[in-house]
Image (cartoon, rainbow, N blue to C red; front, side):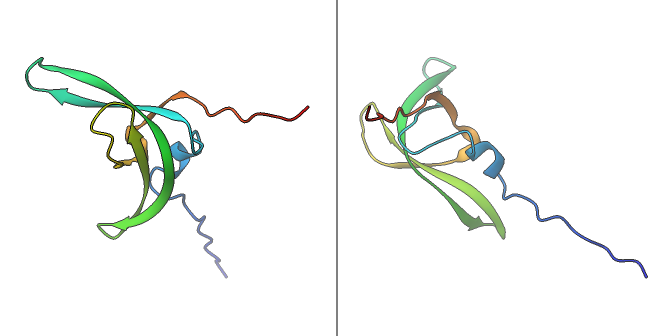
Length: 92
């Protein structure tokens, strides 16, 4: 008898999301038509969650930009790059 086992796969972007913690500073790029180049943007990571989009579970991150307008934004977690990790103060 042949038994077929299937490994459970991680959600799309979940492996990349393991690099982040809430409070980290992250970077993403946007295209500037005026300058005709990719511009870097920075913000603070507020949350990471998995959502169903197009019948697939995707890792989505919420970020508060450091520059105006400071309106919470959502990104595919894979589109973000870590810049600075949140530091937790330890009591001595």
